[in-house]
Length: 454
Image (cartoon, rainbow, N blue to C red):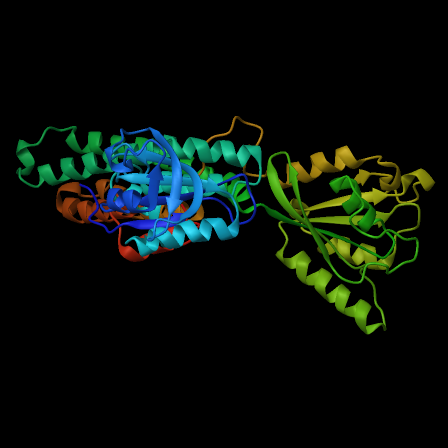
């Protein structure tokens, strides 16, 4: 059923200079607005044109004065993104030009679109479900090829199909249980409840498999925070430069050169990282350096991975020994740097490196990737993975379904009604994943994160 809406317009291309800029208009008044603001060179009105065709002409103001020249693309319902009648005006890129065309469309009767409103209409009009809509958002903000590939699979509905299969299975179990309520015990086949239990058990496997993809999804969507730690002059800034491939941090033989944190983005094995170089960890009377140490320790508590550098050419400092004991081995990698000057430290496991010469950098990258990929197979082919929202709803559905399953192990005839209640609750949570069931707060939470033109 088509969403009953007014007509909206927005700039669909990023702000700034560009060869082409696009104004998107969608809704029931689109043809009247398009005919009012766009004059085709062949004098055929936009409203009279076929779906999927372009018209070349000019955008005019209310007095017929030319604002810009460009193209008008016609998309007729339901074969558009929103499943509404849509026209896209393509003009010369640039902030001023795009704003002038948008203002003209608004003056002609369109309303300024809200963030994500085009995609929201696509959902409300049945073109996509909520999981696919989130895939569009993930694709737009993807920071690696792997994240983009996973988002494409989600957009194509591969994740939705798995959610739908679980939903239909739970629905079948609930329906079968409800049917048994109409029979007396002696009239039911002996294996009816065991069959219901088996179907539920099979569905749990699919549910558990989906939940297992969350770690990978978190890394692909959010990235990982990596903090570089160590005593002054251990080679932290040299490591940051070696990972990035250019001199981002100042490197000096003078201890304490880095006083504040430096943060840069980096993609490692398809994992987007935010790498933070920190001040050297040591006791100091310098107020500025002490603040740098405090910030380093604060970053280390929030990081997904800590890379701790040690100058292996010198005896192990007591401060290093204390901090190594506090490191979580599952969330840290130790680098024994400056081995080219002679390795003195032999009793600390880690990656041998001479960062100034580029030695050990590739080995360190592999160790970092292995630590980050615990619980996530990022070397497998890209596949759609669940988000935090999906995970929370799946956990709640899983809990309700498990409670229903527990009643099937008891006096099932007596507890069938309670089991059905739990299954219906599970179905409600699953329905919120794809949008079978939704409320305005849920839609606002999802689509408000989109850009206005999408």
